[in-house]
Length: 105
Image (tube, rainbow, N blue to C red; front, side):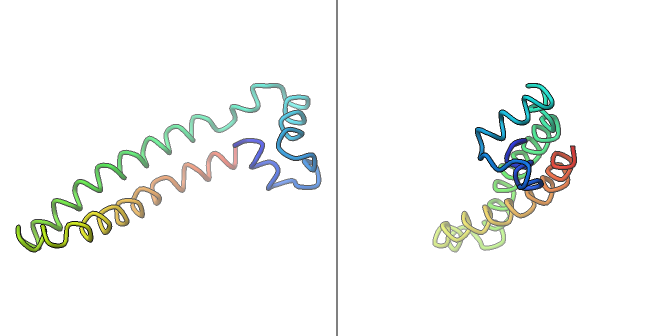
């Protein structure tokens, strides 16, 4: 992730591709530079996972309760897809600030 981000931010410096980018980062800053932003990345994906999986279950239950038992059964695929899409949007909103922290570090 570090090398990919640096290639995107400084393409003139990292022209040798991904492997060359690894070599450049390690040569200039040491191997520990490859762990830059790891904390924000871990916390961000943990938060995203919590909101995604918890959100899907919450939205499925709420949608099924709103539709009633028979209509929920008849429209279960739409409920699953809608719940997944809604939970993904919310989860990504919580991930974005932590991704920005990772990129800035």
